[in-house]
Image 1 (cartoon, one colour):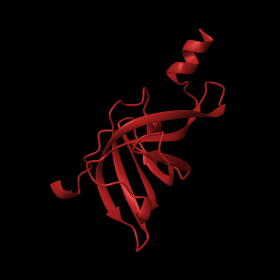
Image 2 (cartoon, rainbow, N blue to C red):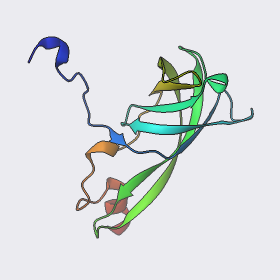
Image 3 (cartoon, one colour):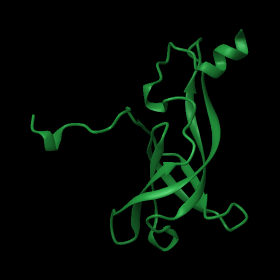
Image 4 (cartoon, rainbow, N blue to C red):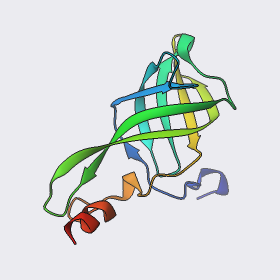
Length: 127
């Protein structure tokens, strides 16, 4: 395997396609996108080109992440995270894919959950 094709990611991503809401300020009108994938330190989502933020811009996002409990339960946790747009890719003539690096990481790794493993929050709540 050549160095150019080696995985550079430090963490496995969770891929899913649920809504994400974003704006420069949450007092502004929110735009909707669709989550592509997420890690504890950032996310990628698609949005319409006319609502697309610019590279380097700070935005605030609101989204839900699936979580698994000790008893194989499944739930959603809602999060609000701000961060900087680090990459924009053209998907097609009207859609763009946005990559955001969170200013504050999530307290868990969404793509590294195990259905049979409780999240730290759930373990604390049961203790």
